[in-house]
Length: 192
Image (cartoon, rainbow, N blue to C red):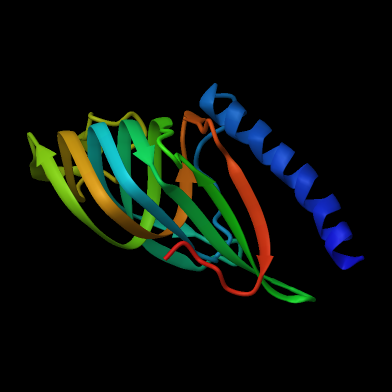
C-alpha cells in the first residue's frame, strides 16, 4: 500500500519536473535553483561533445548550506549507456531511483547540458583546450560560465569514456532519450 502511495506522488512530481525543464529550455524560468542537498551519481559509457566548459561555482541548499561545485558544460552531446541514480530515504527504508537511456545502440542527445559536479573520473580526449581562462568569459557553452575572475577552461571538442560523476544538479535545454527507463527499487542499486 505504501508503494502505491509513493507511486501516486512520484508520477505528478515527474510530470511537473518535465514541465519545469521545458519552461527552463524556453527561457520562461531561470536555470538557477536551490539544490536538495543530496547528491546523485551519473554514469555514461561515452559522451561525445561539441563545445565544452569547466568553471568553479557554489550551489546553495534550502537550508543555506554552500556546496562548492565544478560546473561542467557541453553545448551539444551524444551519450551512450546513460545512468543516473539517487538514493531516497523513505519510511520503508532506502530506495534507489534510477534513470537510464542510450542503451543497446541508442543515443541520448542533449543540448546545452550543465552538470554541477563535486567529483568525477573518466578517460578524456580534448581538442582546442584553453585552461586558466576567466570563467566569466567562457563562450563555448551558453550556460557554462562561472563567476567573473575565477578559474575556467573550455574546449571545442571533447570525448569522454567511462564517465563517473558525483553530481548535485543537472540542467539542459533539450534532453532526448529514445529509450527512457525509470525504475524505483528497494535498497542501494547505484549506477556505479
